[in-house]
Length: 576
Image 1 (cartoon, rainbow, N blue to C red):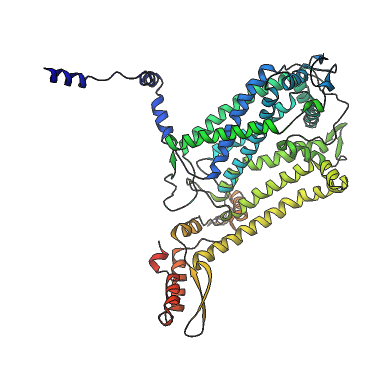
Image 2: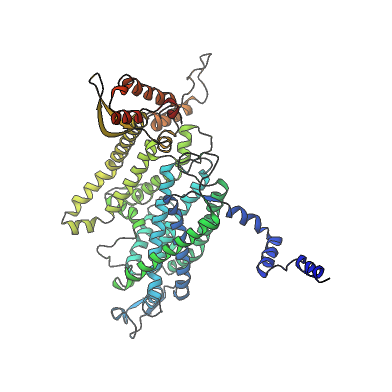
């Protein structure tokens, strides 16, 4: 009887834990278990370049945390007040200023941890934009934007534009001299737009610049509108990453139909969590030890002074540089209306062209290839020389504009004439990107030729043996399968071929002009190319090496014979 009762007690089901009951409650009402299971099984390739997107995400989290703290104490008002005479800094005591500038000073000097939060927020913004930019160029140079990820590229590009907007609106909130001058530039750019310019300016500032409403409006955009859009697009971006799977670099076992890496749980979740705290710690150290945006040195905004040596944050330097490079005489009066090309071209046209090319690139490249296949393997930048050259040209243009945005500091620190620097940078802005494109493309083609020689002949070892007939032969070390795969596994894309202008009846073919334009674009991309080594070429190269030494290897001494034998791979090895 005792044995039977014990067995019955052991067979009685255990009561679920509180955590299990809570999980079951949520799953039965939301269906979250399926989504969690799908995300937990998501594989991530183990390559350092994929961390760039994570740095951007973690920086944004730091921005949200520090931004909530700052929003509690910041007063977004342009009402005029006097700074108290018993508060730091002493240089601002009794000075007339706006409520926005006063609250910024109080956050820095009166609120515990306020200055740390301000500086962490600013450094986090700079790192956020740097990580987004680096991540987008990693995607660009490796071709990760190709089908099915064209829309995800557009989402990422929109996040870059929103990041610029978030940075500008936050940079302008303190209402100091430096940020006020930035708003004046924005007002000038807006007014330079034909027909609509004055209406845009009046709408932004609520009247003539600077008005009394711009700070509250910027505050609303900075803490509500733009972050909301960024959060929504980040969610869409991550959802598309899960749906489309991760891209991966080519290698043995990696195809367009699989992903080689580690699952989210438990490996990648632990790594990602640790990496978040690293990013957070670096930003905290920068905020604690590296001073930035000391607004009390500039003072409250006054339309009359302009600080010498003043530059915006790095991601807006290209706009500042474009405005500084543009000659000031380029104004045209048409029917009594002044068209300010000296502001319109550098402030609207040049950035518009650069960003339009970057944002539309997946569709431009698709038009040149008519490629409809899915791509989950990444390109090596050297194997797409035209794309790599265009990317380097765009980076070169932005760098030249960034240097131009600091031309006064370059002049004072290097002891050079400001006008000379400006003219040199004007020439470089037009010649630099073209030269960068040409050199980058030639370097990529040269690297492809080197890869081709390496696959066909192997690594040089520096050892030379003499054959029976007196000929000298260098011993080459063959490539292992992994290395060979990386060098030969890329697509051989050729320029598009189109049908003749006239059909069989001698009638002009409809759509010929559009095909002709697409063919010119395709030739721009793929007319200069180095074809990958084919299995037949690889086998022929090894046969040639074998034929040279076949009559002499047996008569070499044992050490030389072993070295040459190792260098001569068989046909079967060539096809591995």
